[in-house]
Image (cartoon, one colour):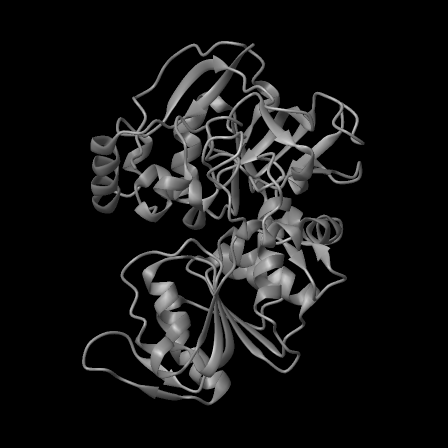
Length: 416
């Protein structure tokens, strides 16, 4: 069966060109240098029992997807991706086959991590205890290398009319949860995982650096599962600041005023290096970086008290000064994807996210959708979503039923 898909192919020259141009002209990758191709391709096939076909309904554009398109992703990940890639790991779709106890026609969301169970392998020590995001075997088994759906050539991704998923990845969506909420479950699960990785106490002051989708959802998760004494959030744009307050932030500040705001709220001492940003002696107890930029990580490291915790919830950028982590003996933790949450009923992040999605004010985020053929406009919008007041941009696949692509866009690009 032929399906319509947006694909990324490996090309070192185009990867370098996209990286160079995106630094000079933000958003340029959505034009002639875009590392994407709209194609008609064969639908992926199930490699074994326990797999089923999924027809996406809505599929989000994640910051990690944009990082891949703009060349911002670290070369560290190159052995963990197999090309051609069909991106899209934040999605709600319709199951087209009976898969074990889930009947066809069920709306589902997908835990995108391609762990031992999906690869037909005996579970590694991390997968055995539910920490599938830490799987040690994501390059072997009966699938090509790929850390997630959307980064493995064999399973497809949400930016297409069809992909495949293993039963271990599938979570049925309650009928009461509309698609516009359900498409946010995967990033919400990541936010829940980050909030719980931070091990926040009720008397802690917490900084959330960044008010994109991950940052705003992390504020919701902190309120639901941690209830810290104070949540301070950085927001670049007015709509982000408004949503941060509605979701439970006690204080919202612009990134350039964040150090002063934290100093006032925590009574820390502010120091001025000869070169580089100011830093605090004292500060918040926990900082969760949700932007992944060098400046946001730098702020997190320089705003936490000695012995405090810094959680990296956004894909980290390069060029960060780790001196504060060494000098102040900080606990720096990663929060990748989702997993088992021993602090809350030993449930999975996805189970908790589905419960939270039923009551949290997710409708205020306002998911903006585009058909797949308007991918250039969609990527443009996603790259500038903060300024435009949008928290999430997604592809609407319900309008994409034609089996063949009418046009082919520029050759794709990404590199090992």
